[in-house]
Length: 316
View 1: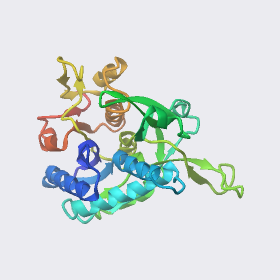
View 2: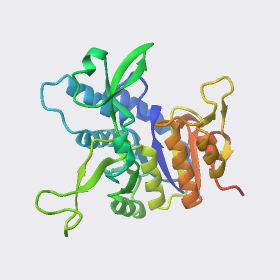
View 3: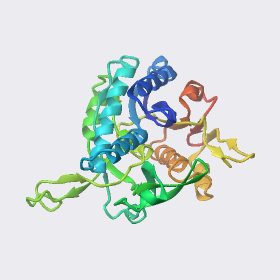
């Protein structure tokens, strides 16, 4: 039985402009039907997923509330549980028994350069007058033909998944699908808990940091840890493109890690969107030797047959 990590992102969970629970449930049911080829091919599956829109909705609700704001790491954990629960209900027994959800923490290096250069926009949009009142760093963005501002946070690389042993156990027990790594996991660092428990004691505690982890990098870590045969990244587009957004754009079909590294070095892929997906595909294939696929949910069946999507393998 082949094993695949299936990273659900973009329009697999929520369409642009939507946000209600009913809309999320409907979209997830549509995604379930697009993923039928996995069941038909008898895949053992582990799902990861994004949570950007859900985090954004929570932050917007906090803006409109008079109560104290919750830390970003707590919001990340809450939305992991929310999306995981909704996926359980939408997927049901479509891929075996009901999925088990693991709220996941990912460890990051506190000295990661990303902490000195926050680049990930999150949460509500602000006007120029509103942004001066915010207690966090913001960045200028273009919206509806004008200028707006959003909160910006670091996006460090995950170094390990703290719950990986539990995830391995669930996968090896063959008890059904697992849902983990939501939103890339809650980013945490080792910390002193106030009682001398830290890196230099018998007890190591972890605390969250205000950052966002790219789910594709976490998906790659999970894929390697559970000996996955394939890493399937499902997103808004049917493949990665060269010269994307221009008249000369063209899809990348069958390719190799070395070819994609050359495109990365040439700056072909946008940071924060396609770049981490390509990096995750390259790292997975180089480390494991399996196959990585980047495509849309609707084209997954074709991609598994090598007829669509960006398909990354070592050259034969």
